[in-house]
Image 1 (cartoon, rainbow, N blue to C red):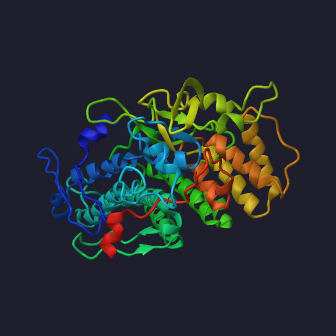
Image 2: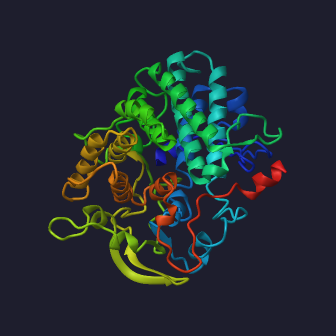
Length: 451
């Protein structure tokens, strides 16, 4: 990402109040185009740099110490953050009726940066309409289509991350409005999901008309998915995930069929956030001595035929010096999963797609098809034996167990899945007075802006 970051346009937009209610801030960069230039006199170079910049924005607050994976991992009882300098990670995240919406590091987190990137994508999309149909100073119509498909897919991903954290609390949809206009309404979860699906479908149409290559570089995490045709497979994978989340299983199956799902391909095949240590790049701060695995990951792991724990446990978690903060103790860390500050973080992988297909088939009553995919993952990812006793009464719990270990600490999947099926009460409570929070609150600045 170092080269990409050095060429990206610096689009600095203050995204408080959903990126629509407060004044924007612009940081001039005399070596790169400003927001004004992109909006008023866009060029090919500025648009290409802005597109690449969306990948930087999509990565923001994902693999950070207090980012999306870390905080949703805590709520889903995948992880602890045993930070002695800030014990709120071991207290506030487990207590009270709601998470504190006034804390940008905790309960009010995972909002502003997502909307900043969504707004930057809107600026790019609007600029494309002004660009000349010229491959030198502007972009050809085909290149514009490829860029539109890319930008709308990234927007859909950002909206999905927002609603994953807010759930029934909803989210803002209408962010393409002047920053001094009144703040846009907060829409319900179903409306947000419908908007995500619309964006992905529109993006698919653009990508299909987008030719053979993008007019800008993508990060190494998109290797194999860096042309409009292959990026469309990533788009369809996201659509499959969203339709499963909506319970729209009949629509999920064809979307997954158009993705890169394959039982003949590596389970780690997929799209990733890349991290690096070069100038201007960013390291993965999930590699942190205070982040530990929840002890239940070990106690609940099924045994392989030779008596060893689930291969996914062995491959993602290791023993470490025990640490205790606020009466929470663990001696397990995620060092094998993220071995260095330059490790990649999955956005979506083939393994998840196979399990999403199993989930869609289970939802449609196709138990035999669900069993086949679940057993494939049990054997090829967990090193476990096949289960011959799965039926309509127990297959959902088995699916959730397999997703738990296959997607461990990759993006809040355990928390999201258990919430979707009304099973948050089955997650462990470590101490008296602990609760499992179902959602982050709307940040207090958003609430006050609408009052």
